[in-house]
Length: 362
Image (cartoon, rainbow, N blue to C red; front, side, top):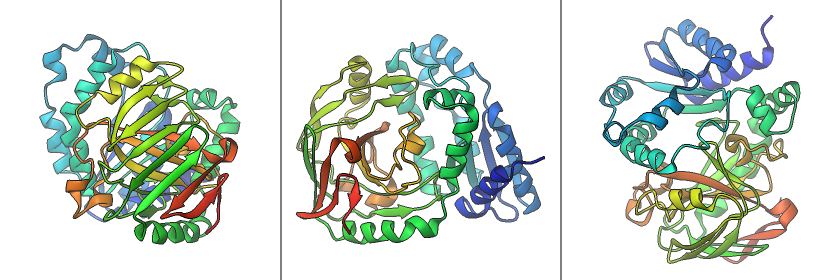
């Protein structure tokens, strides 16, 4: 018997997120444990007259690659992958982690190098715009969240099923305010940070590129970020957990960094390229259905009552027409969270208080 929750999410991905049409070439990227959702997505695409194809990752292949690949192999651009990107109309990525710590002992410099080489792939995909990513609940993700698999399934499917009518009105109010704002200021525990968003475009999206969704986000003016911020939760990337992060910015750039755990990895990401010490995204979590930090960024950055900053590149839709003032060139995009519900804090748009202690005042 099919799980009706899986059918509901598959329909959301196919019909809303990428709007699959007849004759579309649709890539469904998946991992083995995500097969129930991937197959339902595949079925819906076939029924719509599209031409879907499945790309299934093999557990352990990435680890083997990064452990043994030479510099020449890491620097080789994947021409076949770019050909595929150019001949694919829509992309649905369904992650299903079997081991969230697979790359914990891999040299971060190797991953940073590969990210720089493959950046044109992600750039092309972003411009194409018809793409979406979601995470299928697995035992590995449940363990990270300190839940049983059944509990995590209830949590994940519940977060992914939030009715847009319940979150969009608030998000659209924030977007409207943010689009009129010049200076954003964030004040809280060990935090006083300000930056300009003048000339940038904010987005209030629901299940367009992320499932679950529920955030308003924009791009800071590249050189405008000044002050310092202490983040509330560990930042996790490629199985590496960095906790107790504190950053100081001057004229847009991180000039001092601290971490209670894994400072070496943090420095490696900050030094990925000449643009990775700049901020590419400022986001405000608006999905109050997600209330627990689970060490899964796709869910965590949407938590109502949080904000997040992304080190590295911005999204094209946030800086269209104003690319010269945005961070568009970094190979890095790494979100880190500040939770005002427990740490206390305030968010100001041009000196107007719009959020206090995680609660919106607008």
